[in-house]
Amino acid sequence: MPYRSAASTETAAASIDWVRQYRHFATHECSQDPLYVAICLAVADSPELLALMQQVPATQARPNLLLAALHERVLAGVAHALADYYPSVGGTRPPDAALPAQLLDFARQQHPALLAHLRGRATQTNEIGRCAVLWPALQRLAALSGRRELALFDFGSSAGLNLGVDRYHYDYGPFQRGARPDPERPRIACRWLGEAPPPPVEFELVARLGVDLAPVDLLDEDGVRWLRACLWPQDRARAQRLDQALALARAAGPAVERHADGLDRLERWLDELPAGVQPVLFNSWVLAYFEPAALARYQARVAELVRARGLAWISAEAAELRPAGLAQPPAVQAVQGGPQQTATLWSLQWREAQALRQRALAWSHAHGQWLQWLDA
Ligand SMILES: C[S@@+](CC[C@H](N)C(=O)[O-])C[C@H]1O[C@@H](n2cnc3c(N)ncnc32)[C@H](O)[C@@H]1O
Image 1 (cartoon, helix red, strand yellow):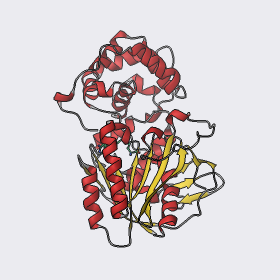
Image 2 (spheres, protein in one colour):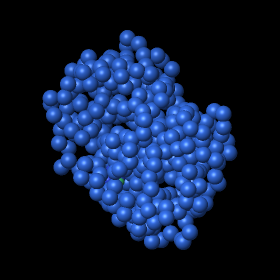
Image 3 (cartoon, rainbow, N blue to C red):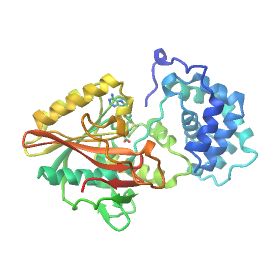
Image 4 (cartoon, helix red, strand yellow):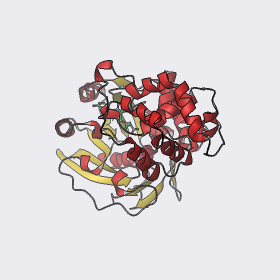
């Protein structure tokens, strides 16, 4: 996200117990990443590093903002021994007793840049792993609507990388889908659970547009580096597929616009589409940003567009943000890699015989490592 204005830099409540937050993050949030565990514990033990978090606006008061700020400085090429610990820049040094002192020294050297990030940035990602669920969801929609030409509108699209859903290869283990495998193309591995997959219906994306309050410009190196910095340095596969998706998106040309009211843009976009095309609104991990009243307005406006304009709506959000009137499906199967709280519920709303229909399609891991298909 771009830097916020000074007017919005209301600082976090001093009451936040950052020692507890960082210890909790180390134990529960990033326990699979030894570097981040070590950094979080070092921050928790350092009053000087903890003081940095007093600069964070209340809306961004979460431990991973400092992790991203440090990572951005490392990715920017700052020459310092701390970089030796970061696999994202080729570092191979495992966390050791020297790390806390190196971290403190690095933070002192980079103080102005770190403060600027903490005061002005928000953690922002664009997770193409979610396309492993978007792909069968679009196939299901193509089958239900009988239309093979789809137009995809991504609300809260970040850099717009999920608009490239038809450019990626999906490896579900026993079966493969999507674009043919290619070393230059993201290969997204996803464990398929639950009901059998829908038949592999052919469809074509004939139009695509993303809107975001704070889009990432693919040509802005700082913005793209921040997107990379928000990934964890250990996860090289995720970083590689992000870079591949960025390259494909740059080659395809810009498809994301900045809009304060994305649904206004959606209505105009519907007017521009050729007849016979099935328009699809997609949102993933966006509605959590909405106040309850704004969420209700969004849902009501979308439902009206479904009824009046034949829009289809694929929503991938926390279960409590599902479309009004949709029953919550039974709990997700016990799977490795994500508890129920971070599971995403995928739902589809569409028009059939002039009536609004909706159904739950799938549960998935937040980043698409597994999906549990519900739609028999
Ligand atoms: C967690 S990111 C998810 C990005 C992307 N949908 C994905 O799945 O990777 C949330 C995105 O929603 C955007 N956003 C939040 N509120 C918004 C709004 N009211 N209108 C448009 N975009 C919004 C943020 O700027 C951010 O890019």
